[in-house]
Length: 306
Image 1 (cartoon, rainbow, N blue to C red):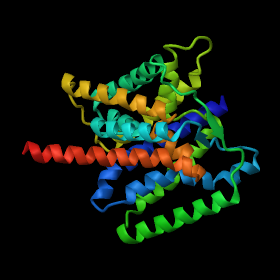
Image 2 (image 1 turned 90 degrees about the vertical axis):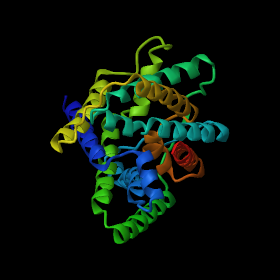
Image 3 (image 1 turned 135 degrees about the vertical axis):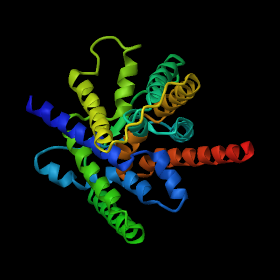
């Protein structure tokens, strides 16, 4: 019972901090293009802070669940590009979808529905790669010091240039909270939750969605909603079929893209990129390239519409 209460508290705090940061890779990439890269770097490095805490957990015999997707480069790059493009169409990534849903945009619920449908569709087309990942047995000193150097230099530079210290501190706090939650619920991330939710449509036997995992996911949303209500930024957006349909389509594409690279952008940032390997950097780089391409297409269409 105590471990459940701690997991729920951590999920609530992660939701609160995510909403405070405006944790959305699409928004962060847009700000970076406008020469405000602090949010982008803060998001990308928040998973690295969890890696920096690994020696602390090792003292208690706890290992962080870092992994490398065991699929081909074509699948990693193609899935990342598709996921990034779809995120721009959706106007939000995986966590960004939830933060906006908690802010009153209930059209975003169709993104979640579409995500699940996309995974189910990809499975029934026999295109789903075997969900194999190479667990990181140990974290080498090379990985640790390389991570430490990158994080310290990048964030010190950004603080000096832009002064957005709250984003840097929020990134550090988010990394600490997520690494702590992994010790109680290793599969808490939204994209993994959506994948296992999709499995209910084809898998038989015991469901990987335990009551604790559902409770943790709900508490994540409660944390986001609580911050929104606290700051009085909740704005109900009326339901519009055309907008909901766009989010549904975007969700389907995001679900397919996440299936191709074995995890959405949240898993890539928190679990894959912190391995500090070439393979671990490919999916996240592809997602960012897809977002940049989507923003470019959106900008061209906007200029042509004027």
